[in-house]
Image 1 (cartoon, rainbow, N blue to C red):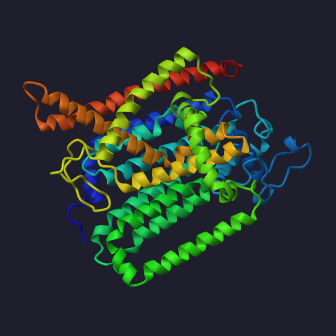
Image 2: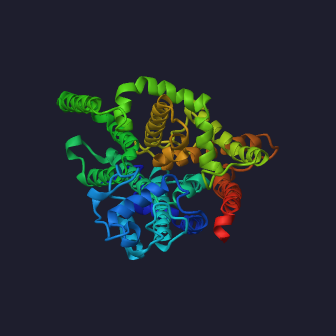
Image 3: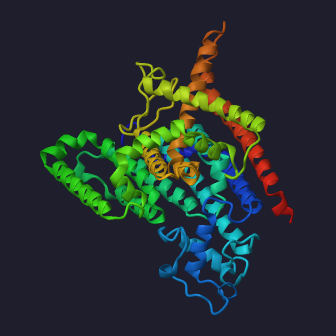
Length: 495
């Protein structure tokens, strides 16, 4: 059954064909850029990279050259190091690449803190780079479902989400973050397909199971890769529930909603009670169960007053290497370069929220009603983007608050990688804000001209000019950051 006003993915593909070459160029750029970073940076410089390497070493079994005797037995039960608590899924393909490239027999690769870029280390870094390419493609597919009539917005959102220097830095290091980001984004794509099918369902009992099966499978995959997927997954659950709000009265009358609510409350209470029995230092969840009210206040204060927001900003846009300390004049220049388009994006988001960009006689497209409206000043931001982004931001605030209370708020707690699970919704929201603001300003400017151009020309501005301008801006920031990284690692690189 085809829903009126909702384009099928086949029609989306036909409308997006002419943009695919641009997507291919962007993904090629990301892969080349990530591969360059994998070669340039010294081993262990990535966030907790030594811990992730140790996970692989102990999982596959260290060689006799490292242990000084017979080779150590591998396996999940023998995993050690600061990352030993992580789920194993992301390390399975990494361990396969490690073994194929001779990792267990390579004495340099099996050092506790390798100083040389051994072949197995580089091979697993390149696997991380490949995951970043998968993420870019999935974001493109996800954005096409959100904005089927605006394929240029899908490309702009993919560019904004995947090309920040800090993101490229993490995606070129040995970590479970690259695969986690890809699987979480896959869960977002599955969620969008579930929501897209809602208007075609006459009653809840006849809902097709295939989209939900894909969402369940991708959700399990994401959580099994890294537990920090949970905030975004929570956002997808809320988005699916919100999309089905037209059926709430039916569910309520049939008592299914009340039963489900009771079961959810029971499960939450049991989980909360279980966490209270754990030692506060055993996990962030156990600590949050005790101090979450204080953690929220401490996290907000930390981000706004103690430099957490500055650190996140620096490690997202300023740093291809989180350890790089920028010179003050260069830091100021880079901040201004980055702040200008971000300011436009924030203005566009404000216009979107307060309704200035939504003329009353037009109906904007909405994921949860399946309508294809006209676009005037705004690029609509569906609830799935807001909900998933806000869930991840709330997690980052609580995580920072716990760190602040424990006296370890800076460092990894404030790094931009805390937000990377939601890199797709954050990047797409930023792209929508930027397009909304610049399109609105363009319309205002052209209305002041004696001979205004046609509406089609006004709408064509973002697609024809915003993309290349944004790419040039991102490239300028990226090249500068990469040059600083070359300078920082020069002695290691040439030696």
